[in-house]
Amino acid sequence: MTNKRILITGGAGFIGSHLAEKLVNDNNHITIIDNLSTGSIDNLINIRSKITFIERDLKRALKTDINLWEYDYVFHLAGNPYVPPSVKNPKFDFKSNLENTFILLEGLRKTKNPPHLFNASSGAVYGNPASIPIKESDPTIPVAPYGVSKLSAERYASVYSLLYGIKTTNLRFFSLFGPRQKKQVIFDLILKVKKNPQVLEIFGDGSQERDFIYISDLIEAILLIAKKDNGHGQSYNIATGNSATINKIAKTICKICDVAPKFEYSLKNRPGDAEKWQVDISKIKKLGFKPRTDLEEGIKKIKAWTDSNQKLKNIYE
Image (cartoon, rainbow, N blue to C red; front, side, top):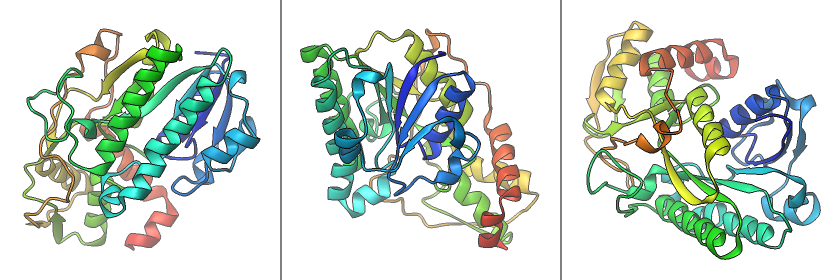
């Protein structure tokens, strides 16, 4: 993908900033909308002079700053990216995820020759899967408001494609990791062992399974789908096809950090979290996708990033 006009909502966030960097480096023209409620302008430091950045809520930006017909693609990454805030405040999650997506779809419906929309969804739409590995055709039974909002947004995107001829594609992200992500399991465990090398607290019993995909592989998958998908409202699992237990992840982190803490388990999972995710990625593999970064290599890269980040050092030192 090169020399395209691309809009990224939530482009100052973890995923959006990495996607923007890749697209800028491939000589595309990038506009980012982000209200910086969870993203950071620091994430765009390497490309700030090469992009158009609009600090606005999506609804306001679409009214005052953006003409959707000017773009070839829209990557919709804005919204609440995590389960716990949705459990604590379902209304917030509804407005951040479903309402914002609906507003964007309405804008596209009213646009002549609208761009192709790539909608960020989540493996949370499956809830506790009926069978594993999880396929795109499997039942979707979310167990948290976050999964409900993401599934509803998918349905709207697919129906708008069917009824109004808008090109839409749903991207079901599973567990992600990489530099700039300051939440989730791998980042949290690294900071915990840095703060206390003697004892490591782990949510649940450590048997929970996740399929972690490194950020550069995720970006490669997104752009491969963007290149090859026809925009008829399909959904794609984006993962590696290799799952790992939280225990395995914790042990790998301890090995890389050269510590041997005692593991203490809470024996209680967070409300809304699924127990086991093993993912079938046959659909994106048929497009030519092959993950390049394994779990241990990715953890080493995150540790190096946390070691060099002064703001993070102030947290654990």
